[in-house]
Each structure stands twice: as C-alpha cells, then as structure tokens.
Image (cartoon, rainbow, N blue to C red):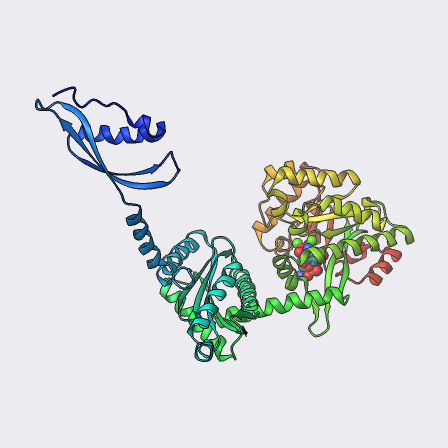
Length: 531
Ligand code: C2E
Ligand code: CA
Ligand code: CA
C-alpha cells in the first residue's frame, strides 16, 4: 500500500508560501503528537481574495506497519460562527441603540482609570449627563423620534471627546463621559472638566432635525473628579449622579460639581480669569518699581513689580493672580504687557534723566513666557518697537525653568546676552540650586530668596546658607542680591559677608513710577539709614 498516498500537489501549489508554511507547521504538530489536532486557520483565497476562517482537524495517517505516511486534513468554514461570537461579545459591552460603551464596559474603564490616577497622581473626571425632560419627547413625538434623538446626542457627545476619553450610555437618557488624565492639580482638573462639560452642554443644546421635527433639548451635567479617596467605580458614578441631581434642582440646563468646595474654587478661579481679562482691556494693571541698592548704598536699579487696581477688590497682590494666570495661560498676555511697558518706561528714563552707571531694571519673566518658542524673536521685536537700549534690562527667572532644559536655556540666554540683556536667578535657594547647574548657566546675578533673609539673625542654618550662597556667587563671579531686607541687622550681616546689593523695605518699598522718578532725580544715598 505504501506509495499509494503520494502527494501530487502540496499546499505550496495552492496558497502563498507564508500560509503554506503555516499549514505545514500544523501538519508537523499533528505528526509529532501522533494524534489529531484541532486548529483555526485563516485563509485568503488567491482567486478572489475572500477570507475564510477555517477550523481544521489534522490527523496523522499510519500504514499497516504503523509508519507515518501523511496527514489528513479536514476543514470547515467557521467564519459565521466567529462573527456571531464577536457580535455577542460586542452586544455585551455596547449599547445597541447608540453603539456607545454600555454600563458594563464603562465600569471596566472606570476601574482602570481610578487605578491609573492613583498610580500616576493625576485627576480624571466623570461627567454624568442627563437630558432634561426627555420623557416629553417620547410622549409627544413617539419612541422612534426619541431613539433617533438619543442616537444624535451620542454622536455629538463623541465629537467633543479627545482620544482616550469614553462616552457611554447607562440606559434611558443617561450618559456618562469619562475625561482622562486632565491634570495633576485638582483645581485645574476641575476647571478642565468644567470646560469639557460646557462644550458638551452647548453642543447638545443646538437644535436637532428629526423627521419633520426640529427639536431643542437641554442637559444637566454632574461632575465628579477621580480619584477622591478609596473610591470604587460605583461610588464615583454615584457622586457624579448626585451632582447631576443638584444641577437639575438648580433649574436644569446646568453643570454642578459633586464637592461644593470644588465648585467654589472653580467659580472663583473662573471669575478671577474673567476679571483679569477685563483688567487687560480696561488698563487696570500697573507697574511698580522697587529700588535695588548697591554696596555703596546708592540706587543701582529697580525690580519691576506688577500691580492690579481692581475696581471692587482694590489693590490685588501679584501672588493672588499670577499663579492663576500661569495656569490659564493668561500670563503670556500679561507678561507681554509687562515687558512692553517696562521697556517703554526704561527708555523714557534713559532719555530724560542722567542715570547712574550700570543702571538696570529687573523684569520677572514667567516660565511660561520663557518657554515660548518665539521668546527671542518676540524680545527682539519689542526692543525694536520701543527703542530701549537692552543694556538697561535684566530678566529674572526662577531656578526651575532655568534647569529644566539646560542646553536650550543656555542657547536662549546667550543669544539675548549678546544683545546686552542680563540674567538673574530669582528665588535662589528655594529650588534646585545645584552647583553643577550654576556653573553651566550664563547668568550674571543671584537673588537670595526673601525667606532666607528673614531669619538670618536668629536662625543659624539660614545664616550659613546665605553665607554659602554669597561665597559661591563670588567664586563664580556673580552679583548677589539679597531680597526682603527689612532690618538694619540683616543689612549688617549681609554686608559683612560681602553681599553686593540689596532690595527690601529697609531701603524702599515698591513704588509707583512718579515716586521712583523723583528718587532717581534726588539720587539719595542710604548710609544715613545705617546707625
Ligand atoms: P518676587 O519676584 O520674589 O518679588 C519680590 C517680592 O518681595 C515682591 O512682592 C516685593 O514687593 C516683595 N518684597 C520686597 N522687599 C520686601 C521686604 O522687605 N519685605 C517683604 N515682606 N516683602 C518684600 P510682590 O510685588 O507682591 O510680588 C510677588 C511676586 O509676584 C514676585 O515675587 C513675582 O514672583 C511675582 N511677580 C510680580 N510682578 C511680576 C511680573 O511682572 N511678572 C511675573 N511673571 N511675576 C511677577
Ligand atoms: Ca523677582
Ligand atoms: Ca523672590
């Protein structure tokens, strides 16, 4: 009998080599095992390119002597069976009307998201969205119209999402949107969640054309941030649902946070941002100048400090609004205003007064501004517009932004240095202040942070830190400014250690432009303050 089963043609004659290898692999497996093997093989047919999923049973064939003579393969098409299985799987996880993830899948994603937020320390948000008075649509126009409305709502919701976010339908007219990885800062995350919710609310309240009807609906949205503490997916959904309920109570078509405190903070910040925008429009911002005093106790320059004359709140300190402006990005606009007006002011002093040698004004540049790609070009343009001589300008930057990308920073600083602009490290000592960095940075000045000067006469460790900074500065040939000098003892300590300049209430407070101009004209010497 042997020899009767001789392959005339092989798999290689029917399908491409790769697929034939794959079949051969299964054949060998059956031969090696010595018993039938069941496999799934996807086949693309060469003639018309159609695909079939085959279930094959490969059975080793033996002759009477028990020798292996071949493999018998029986295949059947299971494409439909697989499709049905996939459909069932899909139906278990997706809503059949809108095709959005259903509650089951949402819970899975929520749990993942809670775990990720905890692990990576950021906040995500859950929006619970409920259509207002949806029942009326069903009752008056019928269920098919209601269904169509839900479908369109789902589409619009999805169109507002970023990749990675999830919109799901819990059932009825209840939807849940999961906004992922908003921020590491809870208030900022809340703010972004609110913006996202607002976008969805607006989009969903545009009119819908269904059959011959034009429909208008509104939605109520509740927001809960994740993680809060030890919360489960069910808890989070409950929180967001509660918040949604409050939105309904407030008269519908509204957005509410689960935590009232979060609501207050977000409202507050939004109001501040709005006010700041108005401030820019209505010229409520002002520049103050705080004299910097050299070792001969003469004025050598000034730090430019921003002031805000709020029509209701009065004078708002920069610490109250700069951090918020940093977060909202408004600092760019504000910073630009500061730069331009400082340049104009400086130019006018240079033209009208006889200034002491090496006089300069120090402008605080926020990290956000400095990171701008066009920072240099922008400065060059402002210099051109205002005509100020760059030799009068110093930029104060905090350590953090200087060291975050040393190479890039160095290039930026050097190109502005070429124009004559000086650089100073602000709040020195509070951040990274690694010596290795200091050596690399092309800056001319260090400003010792006020917090170290404050207790210099009572706290030994502050005193030695300040002394070290001064020594360090002289080794690197840097000027050193002590900030926040309020008492004569502080000045005496600093001058004994070789500090080169001072700034603080002991000499002068920040003052308006007219007052500083008068000082420049009188050009006082402050030795009279030292007794
Ligand atoms: P800073 O850069 O550390 O500015 C020094 C702050 O110390 C100023 O507060 C100044 O008024 C205050 N100060 C000076 N001497 C003394 C003193 O002897 N005692 C006390 N207790 N305080 C003193 P200010 O003007 O409230 O500014 C606060 C911060 O706001 C600044 O800290 C700076 O980070 C930021 N800032 C101010 N103006 C601007 C600006 O135009 N742009 C940017 N990006 N930030 C600014
Ligand atoms: Ca400063
Ligand atoms: Ca400071």
